[in-house]
Image (cartoon, rainbow, N blue to C red):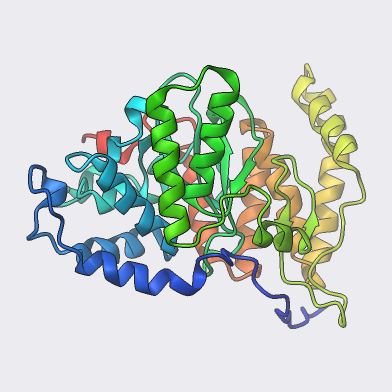
Length: 359
């Protein structure tokens, strides 16, 4: 059966609070002249426009307004080392694309880099996730932008605990909200330190100045939930274009998350080849249903199953890779197909930062 044309109709739920200001913030950041010249990051001769273009080219996405405002905030907190601005108080380091903005990749030998897509990409980070802040301890706690469509601005900021769980938690729709949420959680567990309270006050002042919503369940988060077509093991669900008039875009798996989890557990625990082949049958049946769905333009089904298999770990890497590269290609999200391909090949690497690689 020939595929029918998929029409994208639903509005975007990405960063309602800041999307209208992104271009101005980026331009203002490029034009700004740092007042402190003690570090390479603050050399007034630096052309930030080149770093921003480099960042877009290497990571394949456009950054929202809060990305640049947050870096400016960190410059104010720690003028000589903005990337370490939150280390003393919150044990959080600016990483990922912030490393480009900070000049860490200036004049870097490209032969020593496997892929920028892998830079601070953790084991359970799906292609939609882009890490920007992380703890450098055993917790592997990190958070960053989550965007359903790579051609659009982030939908929210999500957090994860590295190799401990596939669960992604919403932290708000911008980095200011995410850090505020993190601070609130920290203060709930221990007595408030004066330095943390001072940082929180300054953060709130910056958020108010640029009109960033600090709530976790903001307007755009609520808006996105209207377009989530399926719940997934990482808990944020998936959003795909759905044409209700033509009834195409998504069809549900014919199993619940609990039932799928049981199928996968049986496969993981099987003791011999014969048993494995038997337990694989229901999964292979689901994959066949995905192929039928793809033929009829219900591309979301393959994305749902692929993400769930990805969330279960390396046992299902090959299945997840096939499903996700196909789904992302059909959904016209080729960047994510490229990311999942390189991630699967290097999923168990010990070095998260591409800056630490040597050849």
